[in-house]
Image (cartoon, rainbow, N blue to C red; front, side, top):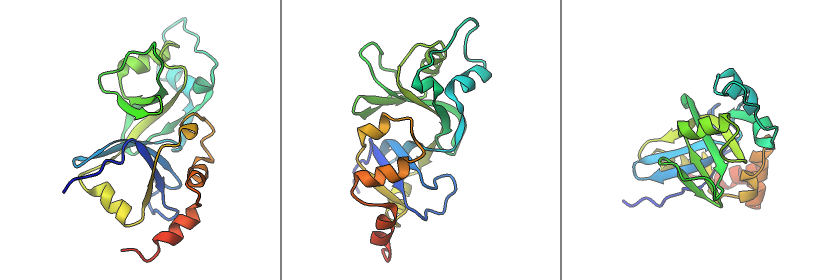
Length: 195
């Protein structure tokens, strides 16, 4: 049976998902096929401001002062429960950036990578000027995500580029539903009674 890819796209958590890792979350889905799916929670649990996280992890070289841009002042977040120590950058591409080997093209001028070289470039104050930094990712095995969607746990949606370009992530869940012309409760009502 062929799988229609939902990536790149958003997954909006249902109001009563029942999993504390994904409560009121928006997942940016970067990969999806018959073998499984991979994505990152955009509005996961806050950790530390990016500049502090990079400094406390001893990634910032001596003598480097990180820029005081929005991306460095923004809060790094939990990107998912899988490999919680892995660092991912969800970033806006520029012509000056060479594509990374393991890069996921997200469309709308955005990409995602777990490349150590890219993380080290950011820690030197280089690399992309606009990015989200997340730790860990969300993963699904073959058919798992499809089953969760059928049970009404997730609402798949196209990426809303303006929501990728914001660091105001606390209201992201409600804002993502509004881009679809519904609310979380409206989605819950439409899935009630489905098998």
